[in-house]
Image 1: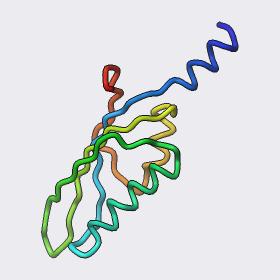
Image 2 (image 1 turned 45 degrees about the vertical axis):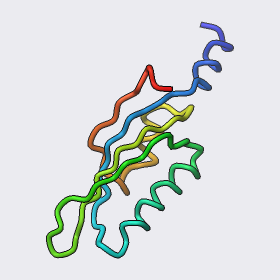
Image 3 (image 1 turned 45 degrees about the horizontal axis):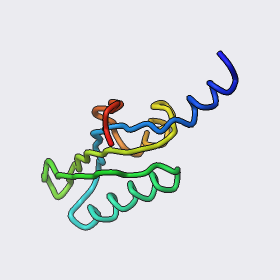
Length: 100
C-alpha cells in the first residue's frame, strides 16, 4: 500500500449514527447538557448532520436524556468514542456507509 493511499484513507469523510445517553440531567439543565454535547463535537471538528433527543426516567427530577446523532467526520470510530466517553454513555454506534 502506498503512502498516498494511506493518507487518502485517513482523510476520508465518515458518517456515523450514534445513540447515547446523557446521565444526571434535571429539568433545569437539559438544554445546557445538549448544548454542551454540540459544543464538544464541534470543538473537535465533528459536523452534526442530525440530532434528536428524548428524556427518560423522571424519578426525583433526575432524567436520562437519550440522544440520537448522525455525525460526519474524518475521525475513526475509536477517536470519536474517546471524545464522547466518559461524559456520555454510548448505547449504539454504527458507521453509515450510504448516508448523505
